[in-house]
Length: 130
Image 1 (cartoon, rainbow, N blue to C red):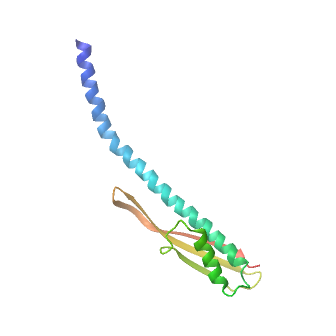
Image 2 (tube, rainbow, N blue to C red):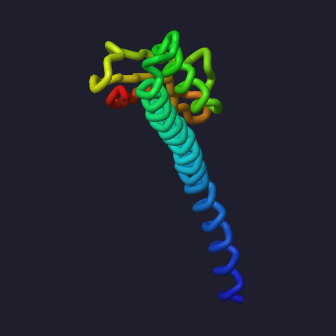
Image 3 (tube, rainbow, N blue to C red):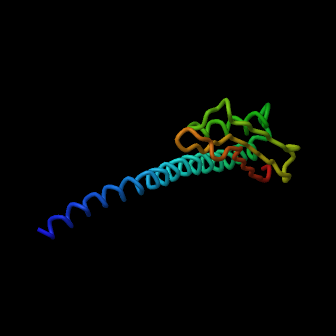
């Protein structure tokens, strides 16, 4: 009889432990998902800027090499919201000099509707004009 009473009280204890730990685990899970999405956007931005700088480096004979480089960034960053993506290109377009392509993109980390952190991701890449 004594063993049976002890089993009932432990069953209630595990339910209370689950009720206390589950919200913390859910919060951690959602934080990891939000951070993963932000990191994905950062890697996409990095790759897009690198691709845009390469396009700009080989486009010095184009009618508008700056526009060619910016279009290269926007094409490579297809999964990002294009209206939020800001691209800038700097160069003199002389052979042997640098072309610098920079881009920024906003991010927001929110957990259960509460914004924890927000700002802008930024990346820059420099290539020699060919």
